[in-house]
Length: 307
View: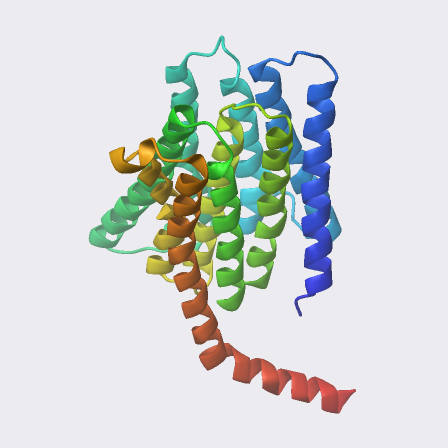
């Protein structure tokens, strides 16, 4: 059964580890370059993830067997490596986006490897539809990644990683209520590490583009939603709503908001992202109360009688 205290402990440990690492790494040498700050934020997220998953005692198999294993042991580390390389000024942007695109194309197949979606025999039409669906999900990943990175370059700040953290945690709650407890728990360290890294950069008062943190956040969110969609009971509509919700931050680029006071623009951005998240979580809670809660009540009663 889920342990809220353990989840809160993992959240705090991930956030604090990321925050302290970023602050310490950027305080070693003054002044720190943009590259150093970007590298520190990426490594800070990696450390926060490791600490959080250690607190949760999340058991991952090596070599990876399940989709969640492949996400946390292959795809997320690969994203961290790509963002570290892409953050150096000597790396052309075209090369950086080529690496990101290759990862986006490979990610769905890696997550579905060995599953019925790829290995079961079927007609040519079924194979064509499966291939088209994989292309669609890859396009959604690279498109969301590209748009949020572009927005970060146009309007540097903490709104994008914070929105990704908020969306990731909402995705975790939704997936848990859909019956995939372990997958939902895996979002806790990711969301907390994004928050810790973002707070650290805010404390340094540097308007920098957190492209590395954004990349890790987008890929992590995509992976969790993809697994919940194909291996859990998460609907396609909920998965797409959660994945695309952070793109509502682009409202800040509209002419009538672009030159408004920052606090007003920030409030509108947070509200616009929060609305679809609240709708999805509310609908998931209603479905849980209708379908899962009675079953859990029966199991609890049986355990009570047995004890």
